Image 1: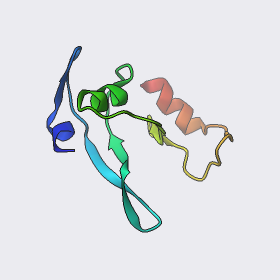
Image 2: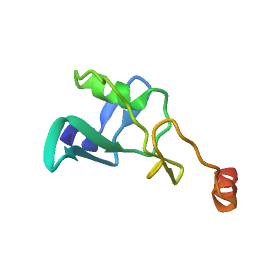
Image 3: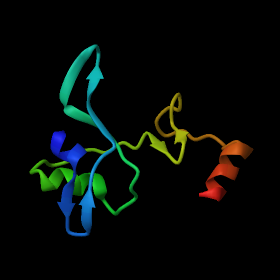
Image 4: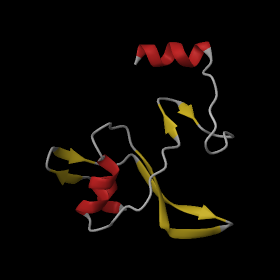
Length: 92
């Protein structure tokens, strides 16, 4: 985790995560599940960061993108964006 926070040199330049922590499921820490926050859109960046450290990523789950969250949205479901959300996306 410390290496990811400090930065890792990848083939397309240095990269670091903004925050990283183990996931808590059922009140216990699961060190096989990691939450990562970053602000880079580089191709396959999460997989490449972990592979650089010798880890294999089995599953990725994006929870927030451009200020949008899937909180309270069941798997396989969708919702319409508000006008404010659409306006924000058009600005970025």
